[in-house]
Image (cartoon, rainbow, N blue to C red; front, side, top):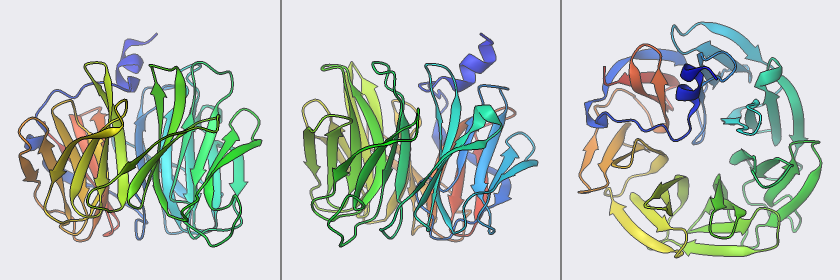
Length: 348
């Protein structure tokens, strides 16, 4: 295997530099970011050619692909007919096939096969719901099948449209749904492999709580209740000392860290009453979160809980941030806001 490819695509690659030294570099591209969500753009290093790419929606409801190194547009993906809300990148570590999954205001979900020249692999059409807030792909190592997971906003219809749905990525068939019994919005989806029982779970971040269900079995693993109650907008899972934690951002300025095995709150960090959107792990010491209304992003030291606001460069709500090992600048961050601009930040 090419060592560079293995290096760039390693999911748990640890960024070692201090993110407090991130400095604004330049604007990368314009993006149709208005009313977007936590994953309004995506950036990744492709396994097939070891090059970096940025995927962003334009104002014609297409997804544009740009090179990370020099911001050159190389392709547009046509398939959506309304405003695109979400785009996420996934790689199947069983065979290294790569995919994008995107959603729009027309209740459409599209899976793009990067390995096959970005061709559409499947298109899923919902009938109800305001938005499809989140989506993801899951590749269980203990199962030959792979899965598409989607969630809608709440509806008043008593059917499976107001639910988190599961489809087969292998053949596109519908498998099951996780009923949204409380008629609440599911803002963000994550998958989690529980090493203690060898099972996969879907984590649904929603209004006031986090719901964890078994991927395929009818099992409610846990409902984690926020105190105080708020909307959980985004999150990630990380491991320290063989224990798994969920870190989530919220609408009232709290960052909550949950112990997934003990099913309780491990730590709550108050960033003082601001809407926190997309949140990422920089390394085991730092996390970074998009601070919407303050038009910046915050860096939080998990050891001493010191919070630093990075200089304001955006002119509207910052909603999405992504870290990437840039081919020229190394450890870097990209941010997107409702000012319709993606900006590059780097330590070098």
